[in-house]
Image (tube, rainbow, N blue to C red; front, side, top):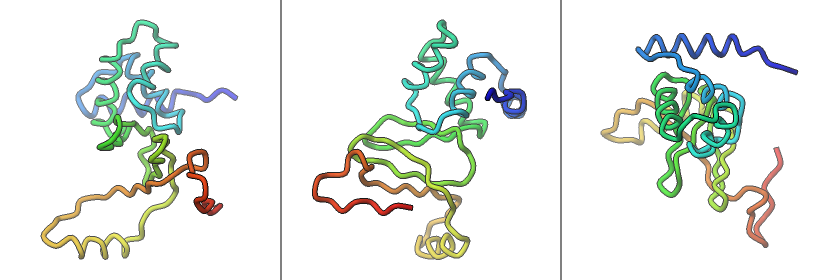
Amino acid sequence: MTMNPAPREGRLRQALEANGQRFTEQRAAVFRYLSHTDVHPTADDVFLAVRLALPGISLATVYKSLETLVGCGLAVKLSYADAAARYDGRTDPHHHARCIACSRVVDLPGDLSRGEVDALRDRATGFTVTGYRLELSGYCRDCLPAGSPAPARA
């Protein structure tokens, strides 16, 4: 089944124009890749994938395209102190779980309720909360250390 790229490309064009950016084929290729994957790739991963369709693209162009997409609200940059940044083409409210052994990142559905966010906000004394990001860390099924309890199934 082939997806019609027109609605996504229109969304890309509109967001770029609203942020004073030009539409380029390189940005479109990076956007298409991010919007069709759920693996939360690094910039290097994006470069390797996009270069199959655009052999002349450079790693620097991929980095610039990713930052432009993040700045336009079309992608999210997931930064971790112990690893390379990863990018998420999903901008809807959701959370992440990250494996501390292999660095795999997976999407978790849902959002905290307004009451839960308010309760956390109340604990942040002297801090104005403007948003939040929830990330669970642990081991994926493939990396679970021997003797650890098996993860619960959904």
